[in-house]
Length: 283
Image 1 (spheres, rainbow, N blue to C red):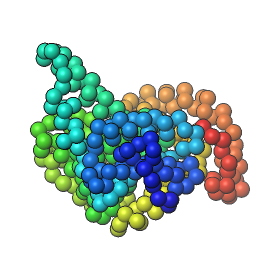
Image 2 (image 1 turned 45 degrees about the vertical axis):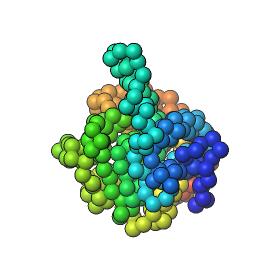
Image 3 (image 1 turned 45 degrees about the horizontal axis):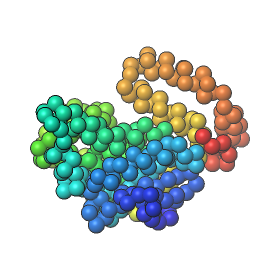
Image 4 (image 1 turned 135 degrees about the horizontal axis):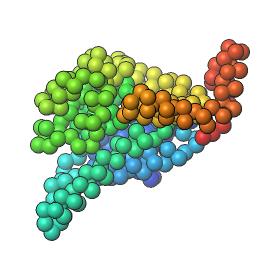
């Protein structure tokens, strides 16, 4: 894997392209344990908006630089926004604070809205906002030393940028979600695997990143029409009834089946060739 370098566009993220059609987004404030500063919340939106439109990107891999994945929100940097909202009276203060919260929610919603699958690789601590981030991703991997903490109740607030909405959809146990969110206890890798928060656990970061890149390469080798359509329809199905999901799928595929990718893939399968041998047009 090519090493990530800080992009001139971003101060909290490092962007690299370790394999064809794969973009690596690395949280890159290792000296601050990748704490989420004001710049981070803005740069994530810019980054994933750009990746959504980039035809050369088919898969995104997210990881953290340094000793841990992320320590969560940078309280010192964010305090002025959250603790001192502007406004002449209660209504106006509340209005402005709601806009601030909505803006921060978009930081992780853009990951979900990005039609390219997002694989996240977690090592060490994943605290507070880190859980908001990973629950918006499509595939979650971690190292044996990883641990996860819904930290917000410890700092006097209910998590408000995605964890309480997405975590119940991810792990399926309302009791466990309540346990984690109300006690702010740490959940370690084995429990994260058993409850479905992550799908694979690796001995160390090196092994995890190698496997994450291999997985990203497998996804990138498939038809982008098929892959992106799959992500979009899985998310639609999550939030709608089976009947609504089937109807949306029929409407989706009535146009998306009219692609050369289907014939190319079918022919390769009949010839017992790998999907990696097929050249798919950019999307």
